[in-house]
Image (cartoon, rainbow, N blue to C red; front, side, top):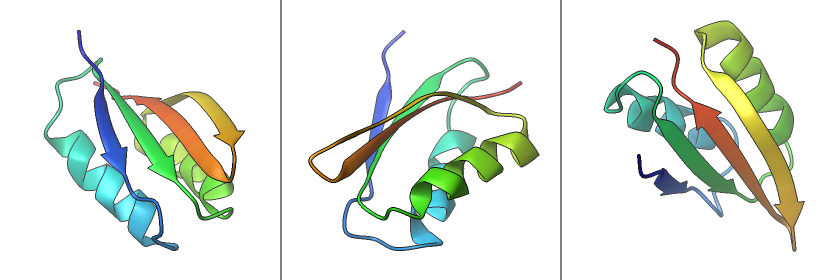
Length: 75
């Protein structure tokens, strides 16, 4: 199964999470979404988002100021 990628670099809270929420709606349960963000607040925002929505934050990494989140859609 391929992974969808959502680039929200340059956007600040709450836009990265809102755009990810919209992108996840179009995915089947179990599908993954990779999100690229530059807002440092997105780290805590995506953790909280996944905890409250039933999605799973599978990984979170940072390289050169770009955060990469891998989210598996709950179902």
